[in-house]
Length: 297
Image 1: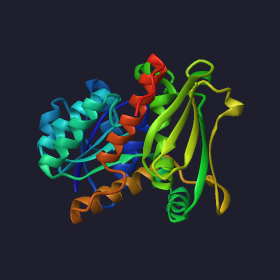
Image 2: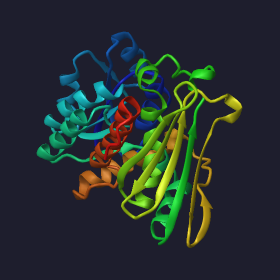
Image 3: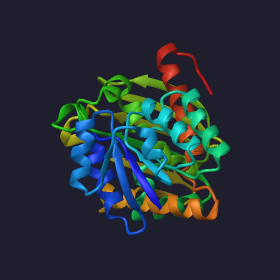
């Protein structure tokens, strides 16, 4: 499969380009970015071509991987789908329901495959744990804490404008939801939200299974407090999401494998654009409640 990369930022440089160039079944055709000099530098470092015209790249590939801010991603994903390119997308799919829905509709109309790169869903140990817990009945409640120190350390993502604007809810919230939804079921309603220190937010969710979950999300935790924890409690007892030794390059390689399989078989992957849209809907409901204090479904 011929694939192009849209994006030249730290995530594209550290994860996407190495994963695409090192994949045995992908032909890494080229890179397009909003900064032509950055696209040339990234392409040169991986022995591929930089494109100044995004449509020229779309015309020469079968798929694109997108590593761009969510609003930019959504617009280009629609454009790529209409050019009949399969979509390897980043999270969040979009930061508005309308933009997310447009991606899903464009992918459906063009009959192209899509995979959203929720990192935890593509790490072997955590993926296996999620699959195992999804088969267990009687979960009563769950606790998810996704605490980052992006804004309290020397993270390369600290200067990201969209993260500054949207905060932890939209950056790490998708990771937490990608773990909880396959185990506890879809969210029936966002039952409560509250702000914590700086960009920290707390959510309480009611799931269609009858279980509830609580989420604590932050990008401004002290570095010593950073980390991710998911705990489930129910009839089977308690269990905690295991740590993974696999880095994001390995996980993205597995996400590319999933896209290849979906494109070949026509069977949607569980982490397709439809899941990305559902996550966007839940986060938008939480954001609305944080803003207005009105409970939303």
